[in-house]
Length: 587
Image (cartoon, rainbow, N blue to C red; front, top):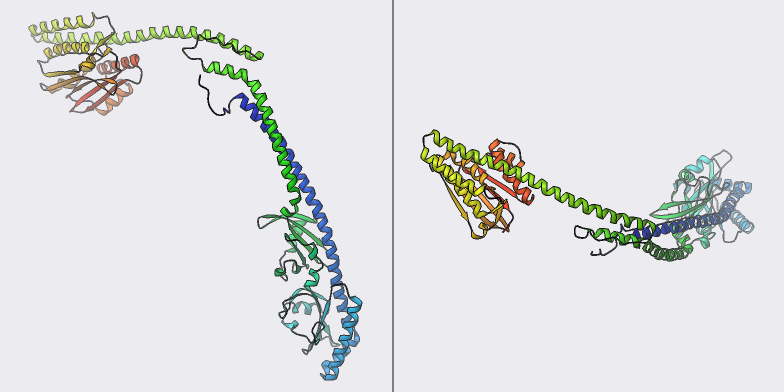
């Protein structure tokens, strides 16, 4: 028996190998996956907690910066000497009053910066009087450069605050392009009218210097106020924008210090520290892929280790599967090799107890199959002989009845001499058919019978139709069942040309075509309607005579030669009918 090439996925060996390999793969993959996830989660939690501590330290310094700005604002705001000098100058705008006010402001600035100097932090004081005069501690000449509070969007906020300090998250200086954090307020005179605007500013870059060392290329840090406006950021381009919805952030973080979120198609570790005193929040975004870079090597090692284990498991599974399946494969090969020619062979496959039992049962079944096949073969032969005998028994009396009926008609018409000739031909025909015990005859012998039958019918119809026969040498030697074509000739006479009244023609042709023997009976009679042809092809009952003729021929062909052979009916009403028998070549 020919072996199949390739992998047979239904074999026991392959199944055992695949099951063990799959089980090992699942166990190793699940262990590696969940182990990696737990390790990853632990690492992210540790990093998130550490970053939260870093942000809290930055938040403490930012809070101190804000507190210092508020302190300086209060020192200026509650300085009675400053208020007196301001009132005097706004009442009388003289050079002496202006010089006194400017000198006092410079003195305050010098004192407070010495007292509150904090590393790189620097505070600038802006005082803008209602009459338009301004003071800027950062300017070279201490004159206000461009700070015009009434033109700012936060002017309404400081008006509504009534002298309290208002956080202005970000102001951009149009001259130097820098961003500043501001603590702004209004100073009122004794009649509670706006007298001046006091603004303490901190350069955003000074805030940036507090945290730039802890920022990497893959992270972004933000300092935002309670409204979500960015005071300072490692991404300088977004300073001053109201970038965050604080209510949504509360929902996002909940009670946690960090969370994993997705931004622009990447997983981000989002950490936050909210200072309850200042109301400011320090937040940081770090790409998770950057954080997990240290464990990528661990993951690679785990993958390599898992692959090695899987490879070893595959080898072990294959060896085990081969050992278990070898006797089964031999038994399977033996069973597959069993056919009609190898039923006498004996199965000698041994091995496991179960295999031995199967082998013994296969041998027992082979003996039973041989006995059943022989019995079935004998019964089939008997059945086929009975069926063919029944069909032949239908043809013989039917054929004799039609012939004797024709003789009777001739006698009744006082055509005794012709009736005698018809009987002589009939006797000769019976001698040719009934006296021949053979089931099969040659096509030439069948045509001789057809000629005798045609002569009998021509007596009856006064030569009212003609029958022509065509049979080649090779076709004439072929063997066919006896009286197979006669019913077709009979149908052509009685149901085809009988109504033509003198000009009927029947042509019987035998020839070899495409490896088959084809015998056709064609007449120029009245034809058969499409409905009757359809019923005949389906084997339905049409009429007694037609049923006996055509259906008998069809059944005899298929009983003798199988369903690949049969007949084909072609007909046009009032033009004629052609019935072709398709038979095997049997010399």
